[in-house]
Length: 289
Image (cartoon, rainbow, N blue to C red; front, side, top):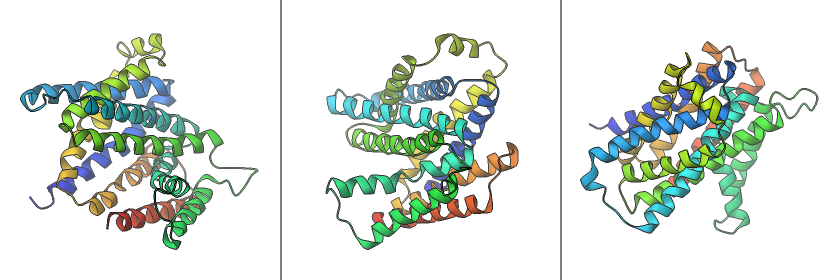
């Protein structure tokens, strides 16, 4: 159907937005962000591995480049999940989800510095607009009472850059092999990386805790079915449309935080959020065209 791709991308974005709220609930119950991130990726890996087995005959590939780019994608998603939750712990779901979507602007700035892309007044205007939005959203204009800590700001922006690394690795790997193969290798790499840093004792207690249901829900919504929806949907959706539809994630996360978690946004913060999301959408559409 005509709108199937858009619907699947939107469902993926909604799932990602809700996953931030679930993680916030788990952190308020005392769970470490790295443990939460580990379970989100590990449950996602189980979903992707099942998808891989189901399509096993289509997934045979021995390309070293496929493994290399899939591992790069795994490093990116490990950084994204972990930094995203660390930022939520230091700020709020709404602020973190918005900060994560500033990544394209900072990638653009790096591209200017490395002379990969030509600068223009429009692009510099977008960068300036996003910086203004970040200042308003995080409250850094008021040094005495910033709305967001430096750790929350740095982790939120870094989560976005990590997500960009995942997309970069995933696109290169998918051009060589099937997406289910790429996701399986990427999330297996994710599990190996986070296993080195996670508190093993705390991770083990999750299995017998009363919060196991929330962890399963987080993994299924935040990694498993959401990435499958996104991968299938993006194939049937124009890049410009996908960029705009993906903005459903910070909106969903913001609504979840304000309505269910009691997060509060001032009028200035809300205005900063609107500036960031509008600028990123316009930039994404312009770059895709």
